[in-house]
Length: 171
Image 1 (tube, rainbow, N blue to C red):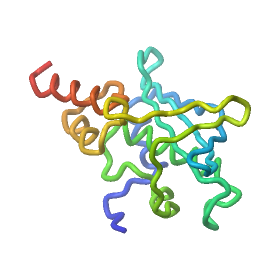
Image 2 (image 1 turned 45 degrees about the vertical axis):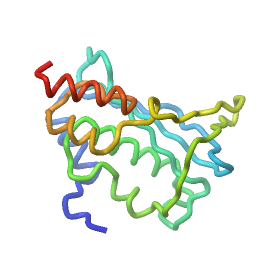
Image 3 (image 1 turned 90 degrees about the vertical axis):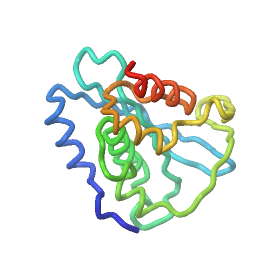
């Protein structure tokens, strides 16, 4: 695994604070979710660049529970929090790699497709992922960073494509 251009979460956070001195980060309450029969802790973070930021940047990370490695076992929620923070900062600023070092180190190959999400205190909700609802690709996010896009990160491939088209056409 090549981590030569990896920027760790504390360095990302310091760079974000330097760029946005009034930066505010909020971590939502972690949720326990079940995806394809596997249990995860889900953590979502929002980052406001300024007190009046109309659309904060947001990122969500899932950590398997129980953790699969000695690095994650009994620290699943903290690892998910660090990953979510690193990801939200990575979406706001251009870094070499979006994934945190911990994500790269801890992740074992998993493939997760369409899923049923279950909150421990709520009824299951189905998450259907189709072409219009898929998240933006790494290539699309890279293109937005290359265009110095400072706004909200699109939630879908379709939204990302429309935004890239507008930016490419001077809009």
